[in-house]
Image (cartoon, rainbow, N blue to C red):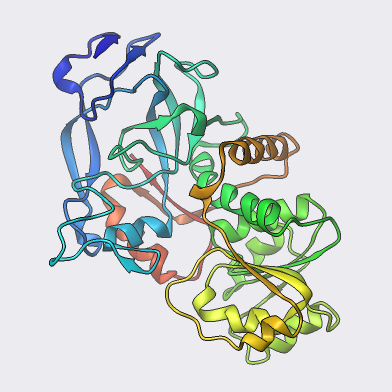
Length: 369
């Protein structure tokens, strides 16, 4: 490997990539801290380690000095050894979708400190956010690698913490609304579980695109955030009359589009409150669901799933452009849970909080390296 840089000894190559690295100014070529996972398990397997070499980018990669990290449920599933409802690692099978050890995370915001030789539209010093990491170089670290086509400029009006809240939540919302539900202005949309990161992002984008937004939340604080994100009405899913309240919200017609964060809990309810030829998009779920198939057939309801990683390069580019325009127009305001802006070593606490919904969901949980 040929490296053009300042003070980066070969021993500091943690994730070797063949190619040339362009560095336009000095950057930290010494050691860094990061959360490392050496085996599948509970939050205790998230271990803070120091004296780790700073990773060096390949030709189409950038190195980012991480200023804030966005926490997502998927990182808990991978850490547990479960993904897409299947075990990916156990004591009887040493094969794993995730190689150990690794640094978790993909969502981050920070400053570019090095770029690969083939990177054209990004440069050292740029404020950026990303939602994709390279190999074992995750975002729960002081430095990370990201593919250049998944790194985007962060507007000055957004903080690094807000930038770390953009990736998975907003790209998931964009893909769900545009590429799956094909929403149109004037349609009604129910956002089930609207006070979390993806839910709030969905509300903001749906409102920006002219949809009639109804959200659900379980606390007064969460409901206030959902209303501020653009919901006309916020309903408490713990109310014993929740189903009727949802139907009343549409005058009995049912919702044209439903964005579902907990498919295992709500799918049958979603079918019951969907409009004729309505569209349900499953964004999340933590188990199996039993449904009545007649609820689908009787009104020709379409049930779809979304997985951000299956988007094409063209779809990624379209989503990035849509998000950039929405930010330019002032429609995007990532909400951070002020109670969970935590230092890097508190990653186990962050994982517990995101799964237990401590005090109800109130925006994004963020780590600060």
